[in-house]
Length: 265
View 1 (cartoon, rainbow, N blue to C red):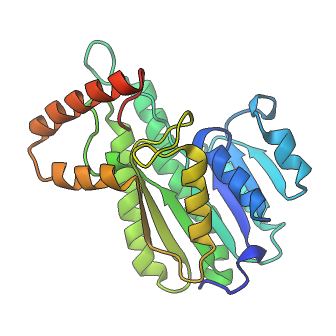
View 2 (cartoon, rainbow, N blue to C red):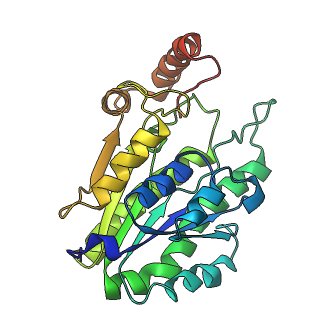
């Protein structure tokens, strides 16, 4: 169920301390929304937290979303929402490579990635499902073109797998919850904190589109940004993996010439 009074929702941003998550919080507050941010980072290390707190509509909960005991902390957010609808935005992810320099899996990072992307999603659902289905609202998952096909020829194993897991979970939840809860998936190509263009949108521009979409009377089920990346990967997913791996390596080489240090995510 999506209520008419969108601004009465409490927004919960999982993975809120930096990058896109921090931009989403900033845009939510600009729109006059009440926001709870969840992240592993200590408050002292979050650049904008003082500004967010000055709004009077923000609280920060430090936790590791992959830990089993995080569910009680998440339920504490519900206790302050006065049975109003929630908009839960799941942005948590570990993006570092879990492939070692020897070409084998680094299982410490492999498990950490799955704890965040898979177990973290399960903990979020367990904490909020009853509230969402009883009082309405929205679940938004921040996905990646990595969910469609491994983006860099096997340099990350758990990250694309966790995004593919989330994508399918959201598609299934959309059918399960039907009109009780709106489910939105955001498919992202490369985005940047340093620039903003039609080809590589910036964090703030992407965050603005996401927040504005959640406030529509009839929100979309899927958002695709940037479109050119998503179209490219729609074609690439039909090709053999080895061909894709070579194509991505070439694309990364070209991207590095334009923006040194950047790679496709």
